[in-house]
Length: 260
Image (spheres, rainbow, N blue to C red):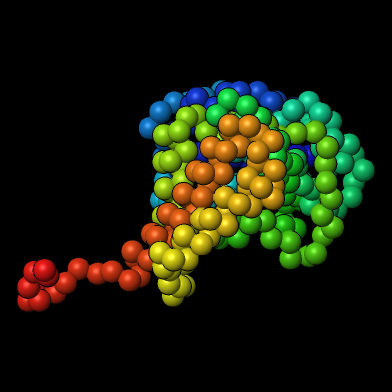
């Protein structure tokens, strides 16, 4: 069974070489770029001739679907540029394909964040469904938080070996990425007629902190665990606040006069 590593990228020159080096063993590499202005495409072409630019961004789900459509191999391994396939995970993947079973496989993802690997806080093993037979499963068209759909009801089985995830460069990167996801989440919800409130943002934010830091044992991750729980609570509040701003506020009409 042949296997393709598939990536959707934009401005990933810092991560891409190390990521693609851990994928040198696959039969095919497909990279779909969303309009990078750095050396991402040049770097990608050093590893594969299947580099395509699709810069009319319509969301993560659509971009993954575009990437899937370029694959010729039997299996798809969906990887992000800030991830690395460990030797143990590679061996587990090859063993699974060697058995010839039709299934969707989940990979345990271990994230490096703010100076350490996060093994609690609900972040590990953080199993993600990333290995699947082409044409028998595929991503939906969600703008953000896209999911792998399983229309045939294939069995879902776990693999061993970690997929390393170098998730945030620094605090600014976290905040920028969080703001982007909050905006996309609010846009998606507003388009479906959903409304938000500041009170729901506060309650969900508090719940997020308690869940991560206490129920998910984030305190065992030390200062990184505390920081992540606080930041996640803020991010949760921000997405509900964004939805409220979009759906509950609007500029006054020109003839309404200035409010006091």
